[in-house]
Length: 205
Image (cartoon, rainbow, N blue to C red; front, side, top):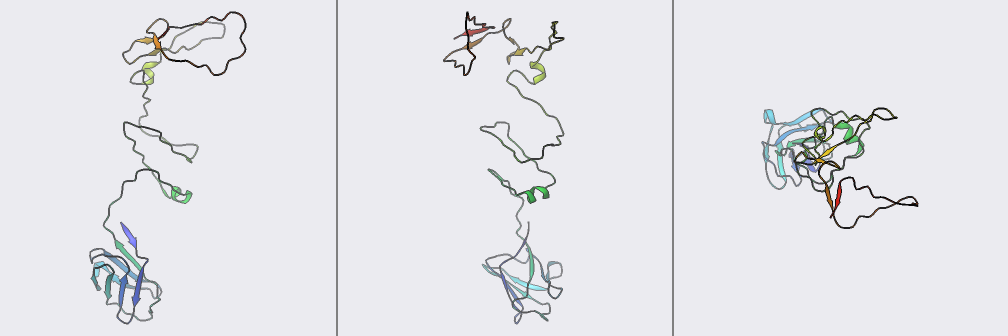
């Protein structure tokens, strides 16, 4: 990955640039430019100096020092020879960084424990490819829903029939569900008279 050196010193008397805290070789140094005088001081393609690697890499330049002082700004590019890095955990991007990204790919493993949250996205998102809803009732939501016609005074109705993973229907006319432990009902309106429990195919445990 291309980087810019920010910590350096320049001595025009010896025409030497010292890269503070940076240990790189000649194969990593790409370009040194003196923008104040419009001059290329080092170019990897036409070796115009020598590089001595070390804890503080020293670069001896062959270009002219005319018009340069110890405080003259230099723009120094090098290659850290690192590839893109995988990122895990939480990554925060400011709005400017988000606008600079054309495409963001998020890969999620097949087994997810906990939650995955993506926030602060535009209200409308383009989705391409195939989107499959994986339910516990079958291989797809389409296999878990059966359309049933019901003639009544409110027009045609659609009923939903649920199936277990083995393909058996769940409900009053099919497989029963065992319920055990304590069942708590949160909020109910006031009830008076006789109360009848409609089990609907649910068996107690």
